[in-house]
Image (cartoon, rainbow, N blue to C red; front, side):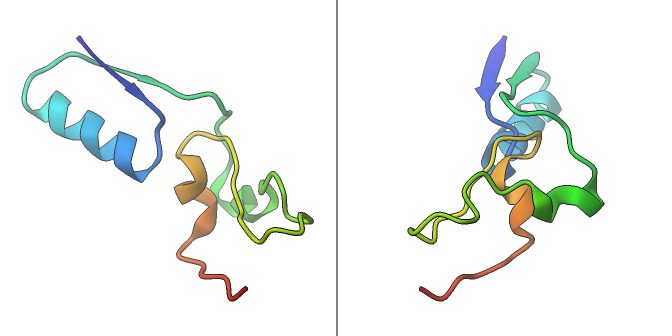
Length: 72
């Protein structure tokens, strides 16, 4: 049994590859599932002085970043 911690881009890719190779996989995620249309509302520190956005949800920060790039 493979245990993958985190369902972001890296974790989801690893889980898929392991499952495709026939391994049983358990994915553990701390955050909830959020609807795609609400993803931008789930940054944990949007008002922080340091411009580093993060969140906890199914799909990880990848879910809410949508390819955004910040200029600091």
